[in-house]
Length: 133
Length: 114
Image 1 (cartoon, helix red, strand yellow):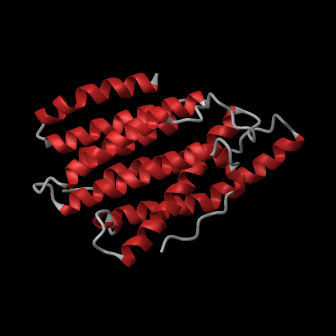
Image 2 (spheres, rainbow over the protein chains, first blue to last red):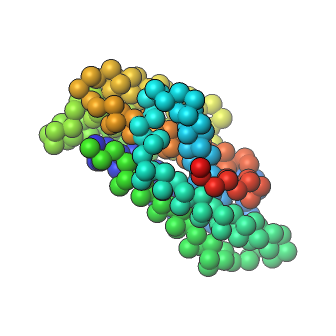
């Protein structure tokens, strides 16, 4: 079972980290580096918000199929870690975007690089925490 | 390249996993998951507006998940974990795809997890 869960999120990690650059640049992104960082943030935000909704659904109906997973302590901890990472990463990303408007070559802040890596590794860590049977 | 890799793995996995004792229904779910992610990735990279390949793969994934749920030999806790992990992966892919059109810099920071 752990192998199953590991595989699912390994795929996620592969998608998020396997390519060094985004091949189709979004309209808002001045370069692929920004696009990749932004895409990771977008994924993490969606995961945290999705988990919150899953919790609400299970609070309303505990018989839902997903609920044993939603109540998993390790998964909850990983999602908390994601949210905490976003608290730091999102403002830094926004500051970088603002800097790029006046300097198109503004480098990615080192702190943001670390933050994005942490978000990626936290997403991957879900695979080692879920479904231990 | 990723799409090709995932598709190749998807075809081989059921047999490989069966060899190490993973139930057929779960192995098929893994295989379908890989195919779905491969299709989503291909669509994402090509910028396809009609995600027909993804819809086909996701439909197949849903069918496999239904089979797992109907497999009475699989414990509810395992099924629950599969369901939630699947949800989270879906959420991540949706967020990734949405980032193509919505600047993630404009997204509000999610509130603390309750």
